[in-house]
Length: 217
Image 1 (cartoon, rainbow, N blue to C red):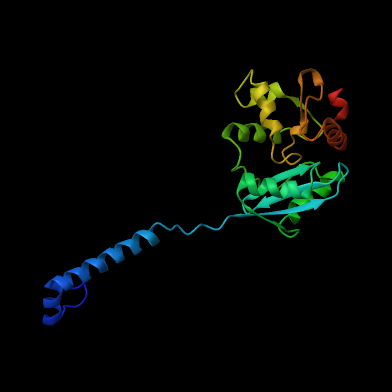
Image 2 (tube, rainbow, N blue to C red):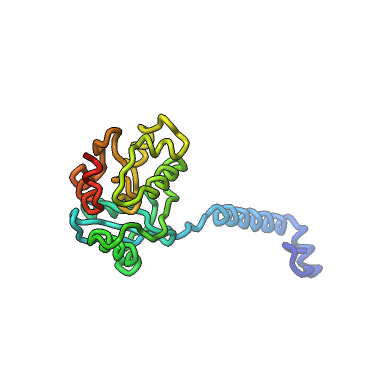
């Protein structure tokens, strides 16, 4: 038999048993093994997922938003479009394409929010790129109603980490989707504004839009 195919003829069987035939068969098997090792080791790369983004104007300046098929993945401001796209590619390992159509839902809701016509967002968020602790903090922040503020310590208490206000502040400082996850509604003890990645002036503007500025002192 040759390589499991149909039975060889007597003449071929005799040749395969000869020194020349054995050499040819050995060379063939070696070449086949090398071919299998070469192409068996090649992994066809999976296509990278895609993030779609859009830039909109707002009362706080340009806002950049990005979404994957799983949901909203980034909201950013005070940066260039090029740096926003570069960060998406590097940190999320995605292809990045501009697409007003793919981001239309969040853009519509953001515009309604800035116009004072929306208090909550109804959109899926892609939390795959945050830690489990950060996800708990961000979800707790979404439960703070517009027009109200709570302290970092209160968020820590709500997630079962009393005394963890510093860790909560750090998690909120890396909120990938500010405004939609309203980390601006979380303030320091005593009502001081605390920090905000986008700057305290933006935090004040957002709280003013929601009618909560007086609550911050």
